[in-house]
Image (cartoon, rainbow, N blue to C red; front, side):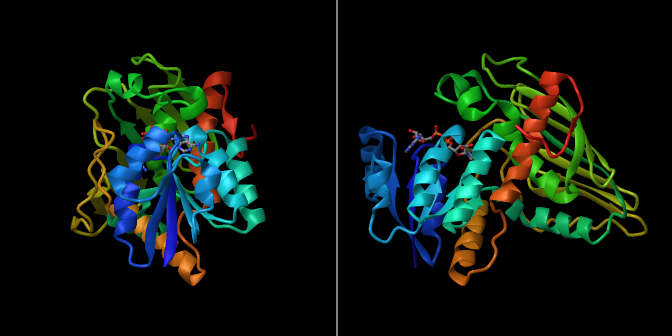
Length: 342
Ligand SMILES: NC(=O)c1ccc[n+]([C@@H]2O[C@H](COP(=O)([O-])OP(=O)(O)OC[C@H]3O[C@@H](n4cnc5c(N)ncnc54)[C@H](O)[C@@H]3O)[C@@H](O)[C@H]2O)c1
């Protein structure tokens, strides 16, 4: 029975509490928030011992796994303390907001021999798994293009009520690094590594530092092309979408559900494996716990049986690298070649 604690008790922490409560081989034993007021509120809400000091939290008896649910650019510091204390880590996306900060964390976890997982719950949608298996086994022939579109909307309060969303320092940017990253992560799983890209970001609608609109033309190492767009400025917000085009077939995944599937010579039999996940197109909390539950089960079973789990630090770093590449390209007005350095 793995004993789990969560640092950061804001919006996403509630999803993790529910997901952990469904696990048979793990239990939630402690929480940690940044102030005494918030930790007391969390203790009342979730009925679990809560701390307001990370060092004290890390001494909680038997604590083995720490889940980091702090704001994106505040993952590193508590995660380093936890790794130094020998705790395994599962961190909300993005792994961090710069490659330098992500690499510091990946290196320390390797040195301390603690496991590091990063939440990308959409990889656990059954329809995504079906699409990936088909792409990998050549069902669609040679893949010529893969597109990821996250054409979403966030209202003004979404940014004005948050201390960190849309800020460069703590969010790392805006629509790409906060919202688009999930779908970019899936696109990279399907298409493989990036050779180069040309990108543009704009702050077109909201009063924020980061982008509320970003686009890139990507060339993958395979030679295939791809379009990436991500926005929080497009009213009312449409479901996120991945399009895969190959020499023998094409497919579209929308809000985690396959909505188009054609293969040369076959009658299209569109049977969705999953009911999909609600899209966060207009509402940031329109997510259910099912996919988080699946990722938690994958990680805890990996720890219990000493075997691999699906999303480790290096796998989570790829989407961050692509997004940092778009920011770099937009700033320099040049094509960026991968790998990138910061
Ligand atoms: N997987 C998903 O679909 C998904 C959805 C929403 C958010 N997220 C991610 O989850 C993270 C948190 O987002 P949120 O919406 O819950 O933010 P939030 O602002 O609601 O909550 C963040 C919390 O962390 C606390 N905090 C900050 N630094 C701390 C520290 N050092 N110690 C203890 N507590 C600290 C803050 O006080 C706040 O309560 C972000 O990285 C975000 O990208 C993921």
